Every structure is written in structure tokens, then in C-alpha cells.
Image (cartoon, rainbow, N blue to C red):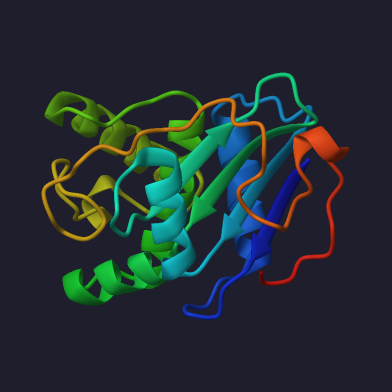
Length: 189
């Protein structure tokens, strides 16, 4: 089951469009969603706090991926859409395409792909581009202008550290896997 939740008001997010994209991408990547996968859009301030808590970096980031092996909730991907909106405006990229890139970027991190080195970033960028083309977001590879060695803020990329097997859900949209793994109503913290 895929659950998409918007917990922010900083940038527009179509939950229906993101849900369709995640289902298409999961199918293309052969992801068996036998448990629950949560994609949650959160405000920049919340993302910065979670980035500090889980990676030790006291700065904004665009995507955090969490994988819960053996839990009813198999993973969470947290996305800061305001970062996508800023990058899109600064680089003349359509916002919805940039947001879609963040979604597939999070899925690839969830699968275990890393982008810590230039070579890894190039491979991951190619995988993102291919997936976005196969999902109908991009028509060709030429509509993907971001260089492989830059992050979503247009700076040299410093790697996300992907937290794995965390015991508690970092967002209140979900009850912790420890406390029954049941969804509550979607509302901002």
C-alpha cells in the first residue's frame, strides 16, 4: 500500500498525481509493496530538524528515506517541496518535474542507491532520468537539465546519509511501527 500525505503549505502538491507517480515508479522498479510505503511532504523547518536528528547535518535537505525491514510500514520518504520550488525557479525547470525527481530520488535511496561520489551521482541521475521518462514525466533525456554533480539547491552535492531501520516514525502522520503501524488522520504536526 502506498500512502501519500501533504503536511505542509509552503508549496503546492497534488497528492493524487504523486500517488500515481509512485505506483508507476514502484512497478518500473519492481518494488513489491507488500507493506505500507509512506511518502510525506513536510515544511523546510521540519526537514532541517529531521536532517539534523538523523544525519547530524544542521542544514536544509530535499529528501530523507527510511527503510523499515520486517515492519508493517516498510518505509517512509520525506520530501521538502519548497526546496524543489526554489530549485525550479532558480534553474527554469518546471516545478512539477522537479518535485517528481525528488520522489523518484527518494525511492532510489530507499532501494539502497547512494550518491556520495561523482560516479554514484552520475549513475543515480541516469536512473532518475530513465525512470522519469518511463513514467511519462519527461519526454526525452534532453528535458533533464540538472548536472549529475549538483544537488537540488544547485550546489556541489554532499551525500544524504540514508537512515535505515529506525524504530520510530519521524512524522506524526503514521503511528510508529512499534505501536501497531496504523495510519492516523493526515494533518500537520
